[in-house]
Length: 84
Image 1 (cartoon, rainbow, N blue to C red):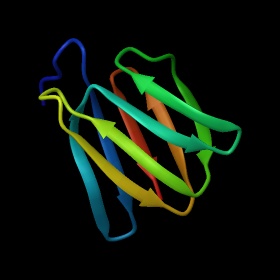
Image 2: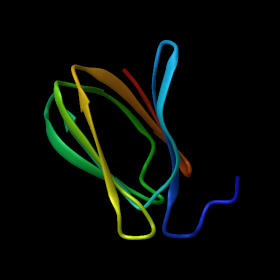
Image 3: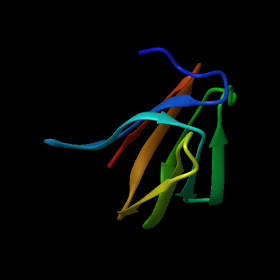
């Protein structure tokens, strides 16, 4: 999948369910150490997530929200994976 220069590929999934899989401009997440936002070209890192809401902003200006209980995020290159 080609990724636009100001987007990254985001996957939000749990066992048996993919809640989001596509291009995103940003994702704001509830980290265990506080809320943070991931943008395109973010430095690689891994962190845990706490209960709250993930807000995904799309290239067309729309946004999607996903309620979560907890999870893990891995950010590398132009790809972010959230496992719930």
